[in-house]
Image (cartoon, rainbow over all chains, first blue to last red; front, side):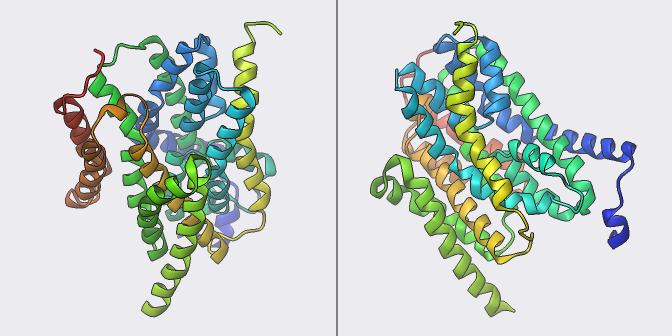
Length: 249
Length: 116
């Protein structure tokens, strides 16, 4: 374990890039392929509305949120008014607020600049979030930034390419496999969240999300359901999980 | 405005900005928060419940080809993947492959009318 002095000392340039490379390698070993497959279909959606391949790939690089990209291109295809599309995307992307807030304290060190934080925040997607929350706590703090940027850049880079491939291969994927591609996201999220659950609050939140969403979908409707599930389920999980931990202690 | 640039401008204004604002806002709101603080534990629980809510929503109200797969196939793929994760001693790749196998098999054998 690093002591306090080496913990804050700067990494050598070679060590920084070695950690960046390790992060990229770990991502390419599996998780990056999960988002790459999940966003494969975004390319074909962009093509359906007549946008160029460059715009489809840029949407992955900039928006970096599968559901938002699906709402965007799906909305354009259905001639939904632009402000309505923007509002729907705004609501669907609200998840990034609690996700990024929970993540940044893991990354932040004494020398982390505001610019580094804003850049790091851009890479937050569900895959990058769950995998980082699982991997970073085990690493010395000063090694987290290069590892994270290596990991996240490999994810976004591979997925940008897959969006382009999806654009070119539109319609070439047989139905059952296309269904399989759409299911990559929910299946991988479930496993990644399960693998990352550490304390009782995590497990309770995990279960409540599943159980409350069918109710919320009916009660709150498709716009505010997820926020309601997050706030209600997360708050119950926090208090019940805390009570379980205190009883154990 | 030029037609060539329009797809990019639309993407930035209608999709990128409404998404990125939450990430950027979080940078400022999480200022000074400590990794082990109770507030962060609560925020993480909120995010986790929200994300499994996303999973449930994707499977309960599916879009595209996924909507042609019967509910038992969609729910079964999640349950099998979850079970496989523990049976295979916490193997993420094995669990995802097991879930995908169930889903694709359900799509293939359920007689759903896909356009080949």
